[in-house]
Amino acid sequence: MSAPRAAHITGWGHYAPEQILTNKDLEKLVDTTDEWIVSRTGMRERHVAAAHETTASMAAVAGLRAIATAGLAPDDIDLILVATLTPDYPMPSTAALVKEAIGNTRAAAMDVAAACSGFVYAYATAHAYVTSGLASNVLVIGAELLTRFLDYTDRNTCILFGDGAGAVVVSASDAPGGALGIELTTEPQGAYMIWLPSGGSRSPSSGETVARNEHFIRMEGRETYRFATRTLASTALASVRKAGLQPSDIDLFIPHQANIRIIEAVAKGLDLPMDKMFVNLDRYGNTSAASVPIALAEAVNSGRIKPGDRIVMVAFGAGFTSGAITLEWTADPARGLAGEAAVNPNDVHVRAPVDWDSVDPIPAALAELMRRPGGPSVPLDDVIPDEPRPATAGATQT
Ligand code: UT7
Image (tube, rainbow, N blue to C red; front, side, top):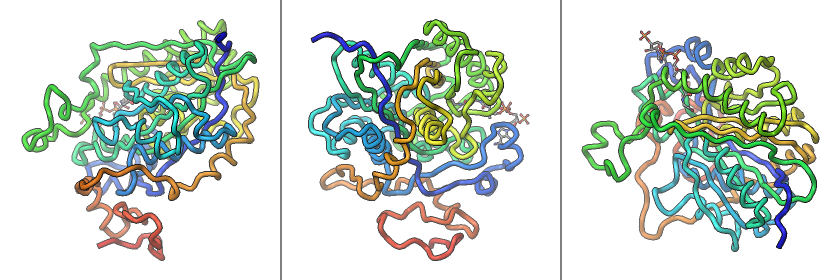
């Protein structure tokens, strides 16, 4: 079998939970202000998963939407990659759960762990599988449920992150286009700048680790910021040059949505105007591995990308990792909205364990915020999705 020459994005889709957490809501939890968060990060609100949702369920919805956009059936997919740092469980892989939830019977499925760079790393893996002839259609998903891994007494981290999922289908093609230049980096000297101490072999979860709050994400914000501003621009530039192009040849950058000031620094570093940078972090916060594919889906569906455009997806994250893909867009952007509408989240089900149920997954502080007058309008602990919603916005849950 001769190897196909190119790997194109043929489908894309995203999913964000209904629940919204605003900066004003966060003011009730920690010593912060809407003004501080907006001016230091650009973020205004983020989505929060309800109790019945998991990383796998959000990934499956985004994945099915990408498959519908591509005009494929679930069984046309022969490899499923899920990039996440918030899997449903340490094992099995979230990808294995997604495979069944989307109704696929034949794909290999595995997770990719590269934190916020995970989607870009997974995309590079899909490109290699497709161009080598090992796979014809790969479903690449970035999905995160970060709001369950945050310390709601730590204002340095709890204001930054949100939940969601984005996906693409990467398909074999003999036509030119797809990825033109790929750059991936890993710098382990930054390994403990963003990390989650317990739950692994170095420190398995126990009552003691929980008492020490070691089940939450920790971050050295300033060090991470320095790494991000230095690396995002250099990694993007390396990938653009590998494609034989210059930054001015690029129509749109899809950067990891961690902080508006970081994205502004990248634009400045590449000597480009901000209108070449797609930004949606004001409505999502930082969704880690989901950030780039959610932004990509929104960029295409809002008419910012057309066939023939050259785009760069670029991310950085814990590890420290970074990655960039320079690619030529070939798909019909009009397909995206129909693909999104084709999948109802309530129709997607992830296999549950037999004879086991989880504890309430919503962190106590977030649940408490929910119960306050003026808190988010839809109950987070709505474990039955088809239940009628509260009649009025702002209704409280007891
Ligand atoms: O996907 C990768 C994940 N992480 C990132 O990309 C994060 C990268 N880092 C950042 O985006 C920024 O460093 C932050 C947004 C996290 C922080 O912004 P900063 O401008 O670097 O603030 P800082 O850490 O230098 O803190 C400045 C001050 C400190 O007070 P003092 O020491 O000057 O009195 C902080 O305690 O701001 C304080 N501060 C806050 N104040 C109000 C930190 N967080 C908050 C907050 N509200 N939420």
